[in-house]
Length: 175
Image (cartoon, rainbow, N blue to C red; front, side, top):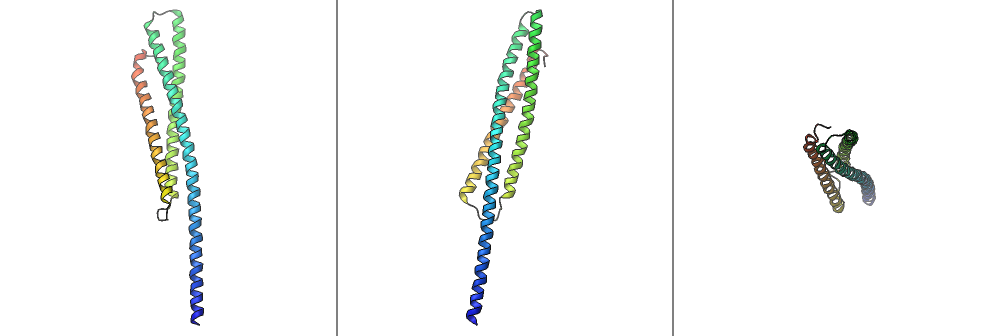
């Protein structure tokens, strides 16, 4: 009878162990899936932010060129043809300003989306489950890269805003 009880206890222990291992395997698979999805979303967001930064740089260069044209035109003697040129440059400047404002709103939206994804990643990573150190190192590296990109984009936006605020009074009232 003792052998039968020992055998049942061992079978019960084996069944619990197998159930625990199956549960752990499912959690690891879910964690890997969530991490892969968050990485894809993060990479897409980083690419979009990079694209936005490139577009902002191009707009900044175009804006600078237009400000130089306006400054050169303001130094010239007024003529009937200059009025048409100034109006064309003004229209172009207004279009660029609108594009810049749109890009800034898109950047803010992307930044909010990225922070939401980061929060979602934090929610999907179980704090008490065993973790792969390599995987955690990769996550940390991605977070560092994201922070660097964010800082870089913030610097570009700050420079562009500073440039716009510095150059607008020099245009002679043309907005």
